Image 1 (tube, rainbow, N blue to C red):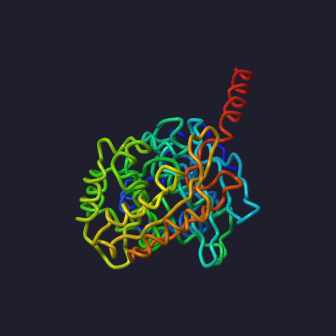
Image 2 (cartoon, one colour):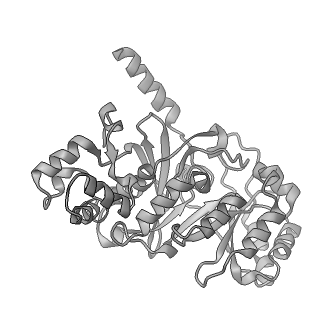
Image 3 (cartoon, rainbow, N blue to C red):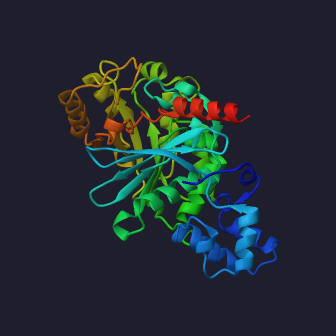
Amino acid sequence: MTQTTKEDKQKVNLKNFNFKELENWVKEQGWPKFRAKQLAKWIYNKKVGSYDEMTDISKEIRQYLKDNTQLDTLELVSFEKSKIDGSIKFLWKLHDGHTIESVFIPERDHNTLCISTQVGCAVGCKFCYTTKDGLLRNLTTAEIVDQYIQVQRFVGLEPEKRISNIVYMGMGEPLANYDNVKKSVQILTDEKMVGLSNRKITISSSGIIAQILKMYEDKEFPQVRLAVSLNAADQKTREMIMPIAKTNTLEDLMKTLNSLPFKTGYRIMLEYVLLKGINDREKDAHNLARLIGKNKKKYKVNLIPFNPFEGSEFERPDEKRVERFQKILWDYNISAFIRWSKGKDISAACGQLRKKQLNNFISKQSLLEKTNA
């Protein structure tokens, strides 16, 4: 477990740098350029937890790194493994006492990591547990990237345990933390750093039109997959369950998505959380098909049966209702898949991430601090 001290908070964190920035920082220290590749190899390829493990770097430089930089940013508070599907939910403490969660999801032929980008969320989707606390702050680039590094280190570095897929679907709205998310994607896709395939990274958004356009127009933002949380095929319903629809209307959102350049292998995923009696009726499926219209090849629909949480006003539809919804879409030749969320038994499924253990954790910490004061 990584312990973060007050002194660490003042140190430079190397995981905040993309490769160009890392090279510039190395140059500022008066070191040769190749040191950047060495550091990137140890941090992202070897995923070391201490500078002492960087054996091809001199002791003098390693001591300088210890004194002036920070390697890890997250402190593992707890983890919980699903007995049903093997998913693992991690609770991390940040330097300021806040916590976030990330989820490791083992698949049949690959491993996926669901990462968070904010502490809390300001979007306010009524079917999501994360938003109950509002937005507390954005995560830094290092805090985003460190979720990948530390989870990979935790599950093991063997080839079969490699995390190949990253989904920005944890706590927060990724495109509301644009700069840090962009830089984290640069780090994750750079062959000199993590080196994941662009196609294996998905950024999920609630549909902030200006930010989606910004991402597609930004030449420095690596091309990755986009998933949009749609959840309704009419403005009234979407506005009711997703307040953001008041300023980012369904009509404007679909016009924007339809206008985006299409590249083979990068279909836009329309995420649709099915809420019993709200948006799961047959007429809703027909409306969704009409909304997609002639752009069927551009989209893939992910149907997500609602995952209940404490205090929720919504219910989960039964399997037959979900399958009927899917069949209607397939009858329109629309690619529609049911995403039976993993990790439900440990509250790690879609929409369930929240600092579930945070209240007790913070109260204990506060008590210790008061006792020691």
